[in-house]
Image 1 (cartoon, rainbow, N blue to C red):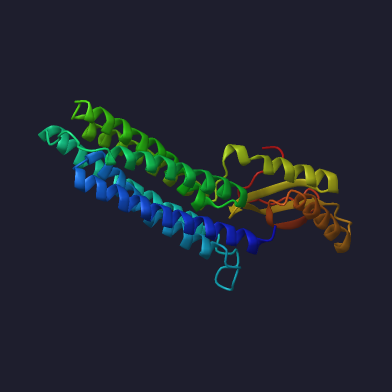
Image 2 (image 1 turned 135 degrees about the horizontal axis):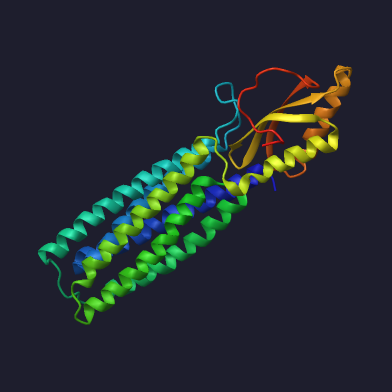
Length: 304
């Protein structure tokens, strides 16, 4: 599948997410205000922030897919991490606001019996809508390695739980436990804040060019390619993420009597071996004579 086709699919999913969240936000905020349900209103406010996060995801995705240019020779892939960062701040703000409001209601005793069945229906429709969004966003984000879409999908996953809690809170309120409505709002706020931190932490790691433990296999692949191609002492190996791919910078040693052409063939062989995984953005390989004695800056070697 070409990148253009992948971009179209990602944009289509992001657009569907925006529209779905608009419909759900209008429904829940309206029902929450009309029936004075703190839980439903809080869920509606959270979904209103999802409109912003979905829009941010769409914009970040469009920017990240732009080709490299003079000012951005490595491309624009980090835009997705920046978009995910913005999403984390919005989610955190929503969580803190909900926490404060729910505490105030519990402390002052501002809760009452909810009337009608629309609050329950709104919560059920929210669970269905959020489940739909989680499935399409998570599968699409994983398939096309879109960090901002995966971040938004995680937000949807927690929205499913929150809408379920809202349904439970409204149901218990209607059977006489009036305080359950703001209590559910309080629980939801904790979940929202936790999600915000997870999204923030994950994308901070990527922005600082860090690799997770499960991604360290790339170094083993590099050392294996060097061995297969006859390169000696691979060292100063540094790998960072560019979008969903790996950018590699490394040094190797070769026999000092080799011709430039022979050494070049070894680097071509290494790049060919690495490119078989389709996970490589680029590989820059510096060639040194065997047993080169100089102080090297930090980077991994096969001995590490």
